[in-house]
Image (tube, rainbow, N blue to C red):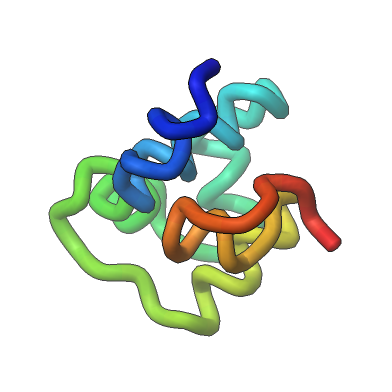
Length: 79
């Protein structure tokens, strides 16, 4: 995928891409986050904002860097 496209998408799109790459369903993701499936779905759809604490935990779960998940910048890979 084009690196410029990866940088210009939303947090929700980045959550979806990283989860899909891990073959992690929305149900499994929400279970790992200890949140409802609808909350995680709202983040992906951009309906609600995600807290920094949840974003940090999510980055670890979906194995991407916090900066990439939060901004789309930097390297996607977790450090």
